[in-house]
Image (tube, rainbow, N blue to C red):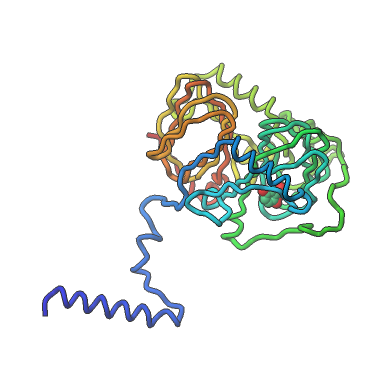
Length: 355
Ligand code: GTQ
């Protein structure tokens, strides 16, 4: 018997052994081990970009077909091209574009999933969070942390569109979804307003907080602040850029924080603002948190692994986990991004490589 027939025979025996195992819900680790425990992160997600204009046009068409109330949330999901049908843009994160037309309301509900909204278009519609409205302007960041009640309404004359970012796939992996008020159809569309718009920014958004156990200390959970206006974060980014040398890997990169902890904005999601000065090319960075970016201002190029993406205002793009990424700014780039860094840090998993 040749070595070749011997190995064929052994291989055949192994295959038939594996078949025999199947009905017993047993499987051989050695056939899959190297795909499970990899020397470096691997991800099914691929880099991708959505130009805003065409996505917005499809979303407006959805507006002719279904009301916000019927849909509960009228959203077109941004699906990673390598994971169609999975409602995810990275392995752990979901992103979608939500439309609220003039006069519409998206009913009040709450869920264990954490959510952020980043306004792409429109001015003056609101997201109400725990009884207070955040009146939204372009590029404002609005949070609805886990289990905070929220609804959306538009009493302006213009369509309002924002990017939703949620940890839906992460919560799904943990099988930890709870939700209330979903599709209740009881007409409870809008929360009673218990504090005027802007109230929590005054209390928690200006480097002050009410002293604990005093009447002004409104404690509604682990994150008191839920509205980060563009006017404020843009000014902070500009002043910081004017006062510091750009970092070779990032330009100027700042993180939105929970003022109660100085930690990430939510338990599972981190959010960032970044400015790459005109003419700068950043050095390559890899990190374990796959991220979703919005180009708020400027133009340039992103190189993500081996792919090149031309960047223009309002583009949305995804950088998968551990992809190498660098930017070139032909015009000063202002970027917003969010990722699952927050949860990775809690698990002592987050890593970065600066090349
Ligand atoms: O606005 O509450 O895009 O619950 C997906 C799920 C938005 C929301 C989404 C949601 C919401």
